[in-house]
Image 1 (cartoon, rainbow, N blue to C red):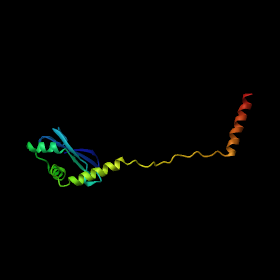
Image 2: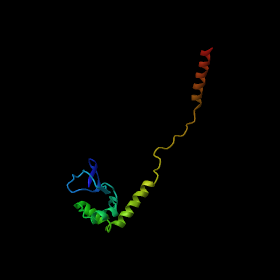
Image 3: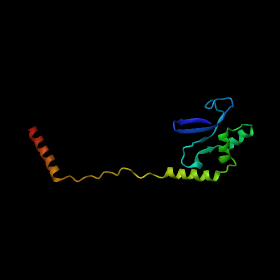
Image 4: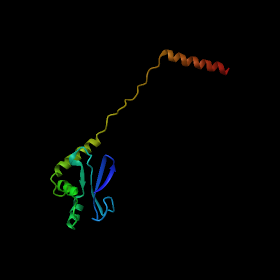
Length: 130
């Protein structure tokens, strides 16, 4: 797992890496993501199941946390149905248009006193031109 994000907002990429590489070092292939801050618990991990099967088939060994994620959301995961439902709920929430927060301003009718001021200003400008 490669760690991204910022302080108090972590985000991880699940990767196939050489065992001797550092945590954020060179990656052989990215296999999914894990976002622990998503409000829907079952929508936190997204895995590429086919590629995970391949890497496990050629002898890759997952870390402890990735092993738990594969057990939940992997090829024969225990939470696959819940994950699908949670991802659909998040997609619907993103598609819903938000109501406008600011209402359009209505044109205020001008008062007769205001009209008189502008008319007086026009006549004084005409006097100045002569």
